[in-house]
Image 1 (cartoon, rainbow, N blue to C red):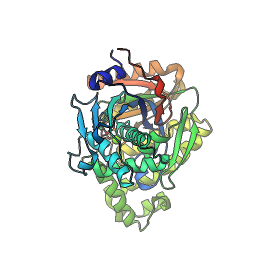
Image 2: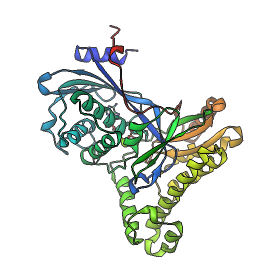
Image 3: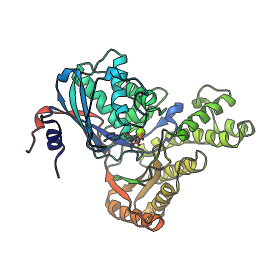
Image 4: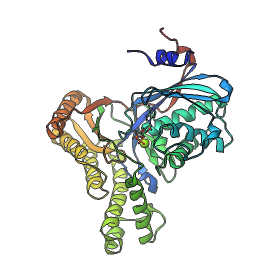
Amino acid sequence: MISDLDQFCAQYGCTPSLRIEAPGRVNLIGEHIDYIGGCVMPVAIEPKITLLVAPESNGGKIELWSAEQEDTKYKISPKDFTPKTIPEEHWLNYAIGVMGAYAEQGVMTPGCRVGIFSTLPAGAGLSSSAALETAFALLIEELSGQSCSILERALRCQRAEHEWVGVPCGIMDQLSVGAGLKNHALLIDCQEQSIKPVRLPKELNLVVADSGVKHALADGEYRERRQACEAALEILHENSWRNISLESVLKNQDALGDRLFKRARHAVTEMQRVNEFSDALINNQIPKMAQLMQDSHNSLRDDFEVSCPELDVLVDAGFAFGVEKGHAGSRMTGAGFGGSTIHLVHESIASSFIEHLRSRYQKAFGRELNCFITQASDGARLQPLNTLKPAL
Ligand code: ADP
Ligand code: MG
């Protein structure tokens, strides 16, 4: 197999001097509540997006090429673009959008050549979009010499996704990609915009199953959930979901109507589950963690209606394996409508657990499951320059 570095050299005829890596993420619990100011518990994972960069004056132009997407090499001046110049679904929006968000702050992107490489499946609910944005943010900061905090970086990336890609995402993905910590989950308070790392038990592995069902976040479903939460908040006469109890949602069932009632019930119960899950994690109460992940999945399936048959089969298969045999919880992860599931399992049974999921999936849908073990990893980072030597 040709290395990233050799591919870069073949593509551009020069050697990169900068490597930037940005991980994907899974979310252990706290789904669809980052954009309503809840707490969430993501983990940065090993699959990642890598940028190789050759800083070149290049007449101020930026050359971009993604090994995963297509053969086209783009040569652009960011100032020639505004949101909607390029169709929203085009991947260039993530890169140029981040350049735009930095330009708004007076930070311009110097000329360079960029190769994008990835071990992170795109559109699988593992946040390749935030990884791509954050990698570009680090690139701009490094080349311009103007760095900013992890929070400010995440906010600029989020703005790029809102304005250039048209996805009204919360802040969880960009913060988890930016702030990931080896062996830890992150308890992120999306209202306070604060992050507390929580150590994961050493003996637990993360197993990710990519259903292969591609979600399309930019289509109306994600937006509908956000708007439903806003509409429910208004009916409940509150300005923050943090002030709303389950009792209040139940009392207002008629006023909310069936759809908004279910959306609201997910919002308040999921917020409560995150609190309980972080306590259970700190106290190593595995059966409790498993139960909370199951409740979370059921709520996403029945009340928030963002699951799909493939995710449900994978989660059911996870629980069928048995907590007594080393299973510690399963759930859909990410925005849903396809994408991936996350499973916590004891390291001693991780391989047999994967076999179990694969065979259940094959039986139910007649196709192979992409499933892998991963660990909690560090957030986006620059790699030392002197490690880059082409083999060719
Ligand atoms: P997720 O973030 O869950 O992977 P999204 O739909 O939010 O899903 O983002 C996926 C999009 O991100 C892709 O359609 C593509 O535009 C962009 N993307 C992801 N990985 C790459 C890559 N390696 N090169 C170019 N664009 C990518
Ligand atoms: Mg995304």
